[in-house]
Image (cartoon, rainbow, N blue to C red; front, top):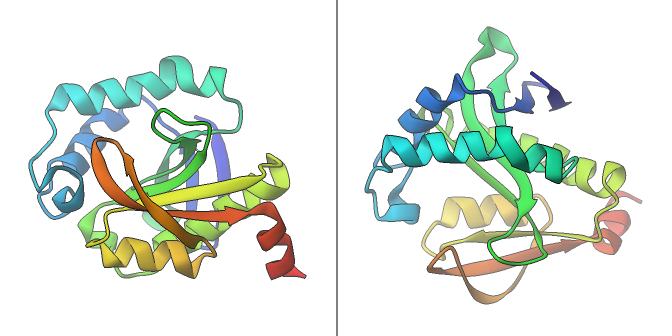
Length: 177
């Protein structure tokens, strides 16, 4: 199990087959899925297929990128997942997250997203990082803006209308100097 990075309270690690059950719990919570599927749970097979895709092919084909289990250091609890991965049918690298409801509102998404942005620009040498969210998902759009992504336009990804945000390497460099 490969660790990707650590923050003060969390660490990210590659997904393992045992994560299928945890991902299924996450993907069947109506509140977690509200802006993704209208609250409908994803079938177990979809959760399994997603986890196995990263284990079997994505990590090897895309070094440094992926969807990772987000874990609390204290108690080694599964928070959810965070990603830097190719955005649906595009060359953009997307910052994304999906967390168990019990961990909402505690700053984990902001903390981990800031660390992943630093990793993306400083370790992977990415030129830009994007994020998307359904307009009505104001908590997610707030997080994206809080960590430095700027609203760009309305877009269509993953079969839905979304707000498209971007953070360029130049803007990142300017923000830390």
